Structures are given as C-alpha cells and as structure tokens.
Amino acid sequence: MSTWVLLRGLMREARHWGDFPQLLGAALPGAQVVVLDLPGNGSLYQSQSPTSVRAMAEHCRASLRAQALTPPYHLLALSLGGMVAVDWHQRHPDEVAAAVLLSTSMRPYNPFYRRLRPANYPAILRMALGARDPEVDEPVILRITSSGPADQPVLQDWIAYARQCPVSRANALRQLWAAARFSAQPQDRARRFLLLAGEQDKLVHPSCSANIAQAWGAELRMHPQSGHDLPLDAGPWVAEQVRDWVHKQAA
Image 1 (cartoon, rainbow, N blue to C red):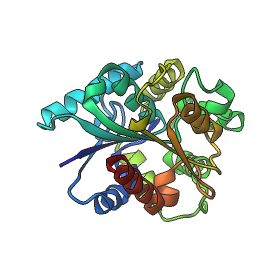
Image 2: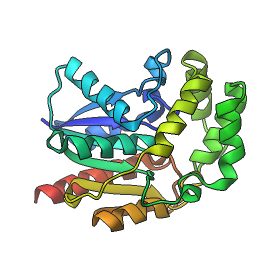
Image 3: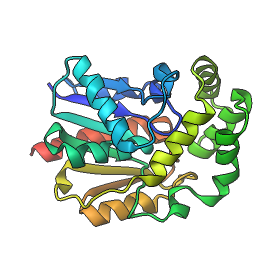
Image 4: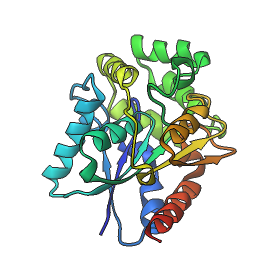
C-alpha cells in the first residue's frame, strides 16, 4: 500500500485541501492519504514556524514516524509545501518514491518577481505585518489564489479556519523567510517528479513550474483555467493527472 503525504503552502492548513484527499484516494485505490500541517499552521498554529524549509521537512518526517508510517512516501505538495518535498527528496532520496509539485517555485530556477508576482506585494505584506482580520484577509487570499468567483462557498470555511487556528504575524514572517531562502539542487531522478500548474495563477507565475520541469527534465502538465490553488479550482483534474502519471510510471 502506498502512502501519499499532502503538504499545503504558506499560512495554509490541512483543512484547506477541502475534499481533495477523498478525490485522490478514490483515484488511487488502496493508497493511504495522510494530510500534515506545517508548524505554525492549522492544528499546530501555536507552534513556532521554522525559519528553514529543511526544518519543516524534518518535522514532517518525525510526524510520520510518530504515526508509525514508514517510507518510501509519495508526496503531493502545493507551493511552499513543494519546497519541503524537494528538500526532503534532496536529503533523503530513498524516502521519497515520487513527488507531485503543485504551483511551486524556488531558487535558482525562478526570479523573485515571478515567484511572488509584484501585484500581490502590498496584500502579502499587509497580512504578514499588520493586524490579522479573517473577514478582510481571506477574501483577498481567495482572490489571489483561485480563478473562481469571489463569493464561492469555501470562503466562509476559510474565515472559520482562520478564526479557530490563527497564524501569528511572527509565524507568517518565518514562513516567508524560509521560502525566500530555499534553493534547490539539480535533480537526477526526473521520473520521480510531476509538476502541475494553473495557467491563470495570479500569485506565482506559471512559468516557474515550467522552468523547474525543463531544468530537471521532469514532466509538466498545465490546467488552462485554474489559478494557484489547483486542488480548489480543479481537484478532479489534479487527481486524474496523478492517477495517470502513477500508472505511466508503473508501466
């Protein structure tokens, strides 16, 4: 039985996957789908976020060991979570059977102004440095990360999550700092990686995924209508791409 570990991105938590874990489980019969929170987010919102991607990866490894889940793992990771997955694979390649990276970016393959598109700088800085207000912040996050309507029902869930498990200003800055500093190494196991991106991503330029895939010789698949949050905008499509890629790898 394969174990699929899902990792979210900056200031997001396990509940932001919505029904995607169930979609992925249905697409991969027999797979065990495990959803983890990074320190400082979700169930771990009272913990201090690490200032390095490496420490985030180590936390995930320890969490899985505590649950008696043994490698190798299959990782499916969004944005900052993608950096965690890459670091994990770089330092512990025998633990990672495969990694699906969604809407991610990283040095040295992507310039800073494509990793975080300049139009979003004011909103990101306000949320990281100012007083947090879910009624104000979550609609902005939805607008930036989704290509769907501004009033979709998930918004009220996101506001509730932010009230229940608020990400502190210090943790938001720590996560931003970790993401900004992370730098990937060349990968020589391209078959282990699948990159997915949305062509309507307003947060991270979709060319970031394309550049990484080209540098590594990895497979890239793009969704023409989706934004940054691919599982929200096109969850069934993501699950289908993963299923098809896994079957292709096994052939």
